[in-house]
Image 1 (cartoon, rainbow, N blue to C red):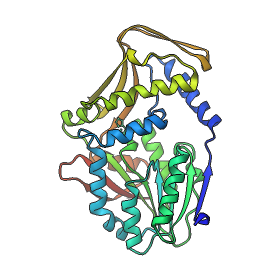
Image 2: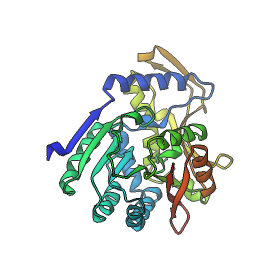
Image 3: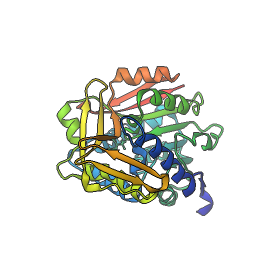
Length: 326
Ligand code: AVJ
């Protein structure tokens, strides 16, 4: 079944490393230091994120999976989709629910996963062509902020769903979020739909617990970004010198994660020849995870030239899946 799989790699290690270096140089020379969340996900970071998804406090993953299980058949029927393009596909575990519904509707032809991790793209491609008779997989190893243009052309008569699940859109600040939605919108033909997963604004204790679990897995995930910088850019961040901070910013309605220096630190980032000084108590912002209302999703869609075409949320109003059309 090898001719059922094609994988294009747009992210060799050198390109990847340059991206990290540029982001670290920008982020650590700002008056309020920052490291972008996309660099959490080395092998250890992916492992820790998978562990987060199993935590009792972290409800988004299981809530989204339940929403997909409840509504995949309806989504497959409403869209008539023959192809699934998934941005940030990861291990593709939730994807199976959608692919299964498309297959059951007798429409499934192709799966196009785009992810920075070549290993997961390849492994999921191999597993899925075994699972679904006649399925073709065209994997794209890349970064959806840069490589949307590398997604293969739609096939004639094969409507597609372009999925961005898990609440990943929440990692983007509001302007960049709209820019990304607009760029994704440009991939959509008239019969195609965006399927977007968004965390919803809910009670603050549940939100904050989801990002500050009792077992400390999220804290370790947060600190892991320093291990990535240490290894990839020959830096010497003392991991035990930083505390995990997570809180809900009520004004912006997003979760913010930071790393707080427990004592003054003078860090050398060898590969950049950069000396970074941190005062005791100084914080590095490592992630925002925006939470939405239906109104916010609709206004972001409108700003991106999209219209809301379907809305599914759980009974507790903690997570939503929405469909959008151009
Ligand atoms: C993968 C971006 C959806 O924001 O909830 C989990 C990442 N950070 N715990 C999220 C994350 C801390 C997650 N996303």
